[in-house]
Image (tube, rainbow, N blue to C red; front, top):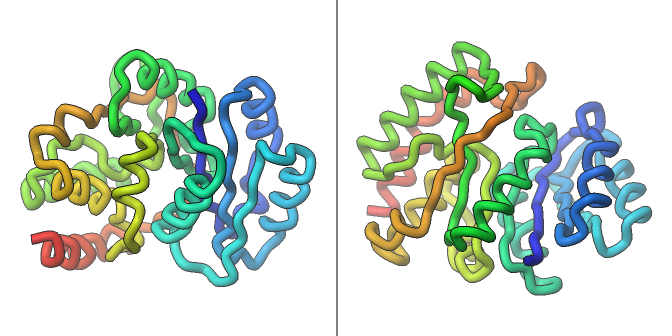
Length: 242
């Protein structure tokens, strides 16, 4: 199987672990990395271009002229990957590696065994897993997840985890249009799946994979104010999809 991994980046120069990405692509020849520089104002683009020049065809950089937000950066990255060699699955990952690249082997194994339409990481704090979350973000996240479940009917434990893979034809369908919300586009993805294919097939073909490692990054761009904006964003989404 061939995989494309999209990594949106905005002012990540101080947090990009190029060594980690390099080790990953050397040991995973069936993966191509698509970095999307979302109008960074620091040295992110220069770092990515140097990295890409070392691994032509394996590391591809898409540069957006202005900052468009994570949702559009991921969508543009998926579109760029779809315009290249045919990939069986396309996924996206946070640039700061809150979910380490070592978790991808578990996604790949699950995909090869089960052939799901969608597989998404789930940050479940449990015995045997190293899932480290800042306490207030964990509480706010669980409260919001409950609201999403009640208002949308989506039986997803962790919509907001930035570790997801989609089968190629599914990616073409649900990433075709721009998203209403930049922060909650994860919720939109699943509402699009439900709308396009119906609830029964959506639930059958979508799987959550509990992560064994995940760690909140102290310099994360997600701030408490984002949680306060979430209800307004959710209202806009529900109004449109209903």
